[in-house]
Length: 409
Image (cartoon, rainbow, N blue to C red; front, side, top):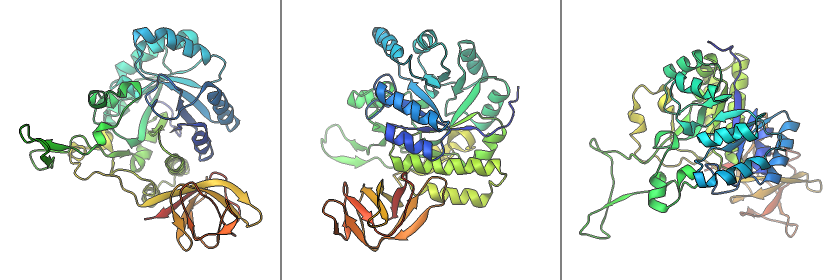
């Protein structure tokens, strides 16, 4: 049956407690996070049990939901440990558990019966029968395979009752919804266990068997392609279509990304959804928001499998490297009353006289020229801020404590 039209939930990633706070303050309706085990982003960061408790309290304080990701494959010899891990979550007021493994689903229902169950894209669901099957197993929401097209998505929504979630932004994978063995084969790090080495992003050469160390570039022509490279998904231009057919949740990929990425993508898609709610989502607004997305490092954007009629774009990936029009130079640390300016935790170098771009929650980005700058370490004036420095930009006034600082070029 056709669901009532509404503005979908904006679901944003966070790799640690600090980034969760940025996601919340930049307008996420919900945040998804992982723990130290059993999730597909286990190689860096993630939440301890204590941090998860604090994260839930913080999110709920601002009316934001928090979903916990347990979407890795669980082997039989790990079931006892998985059960023990779920028991640790009993006292935490999570809004949902994200799983892909059938055994994990069964144990989650048994041990956390009052928690919502969300099915991960790793389960590769492509049709309404698959969605209805997981509804019978107790699922409240299904994140569909990224490989479905718009027509199939609409049909699935029309013929199902549980919530439907899709990815709208972020990295794509060369393997079906992330079921990849390349990293495991090349490095011993299993992508299906949260340890992906992103081998598909590496640069490859061809070497002839009898001529060791004589390397030839693997080049694209009409007979071949850069099959390992992938573009980044961006469904911003098609967002209203997806709202109109009744998608329940829009998910942004990037659980190992920085404050800069999470803040910017959340800011853009929050504003886009607000424009749609106000019937102001015009081509001009889409162009403006797309230019803002360009301020974060990304690969060439694509509408992926959802809207492409000719999928050659997904194969024509010559020179699909990272586009870096802006550099992430720092985050807000504190405020100096003495110098009437923000103290910045510097991530990349910038200098006096340069024009920087400042992003703040629910405000238009502002540009300012860096004038007088003070080094916090010795309270002296400086012309250059370097990574890990704390510096004060004088007379800039007060900014949001979640401000992000960028510079063009």
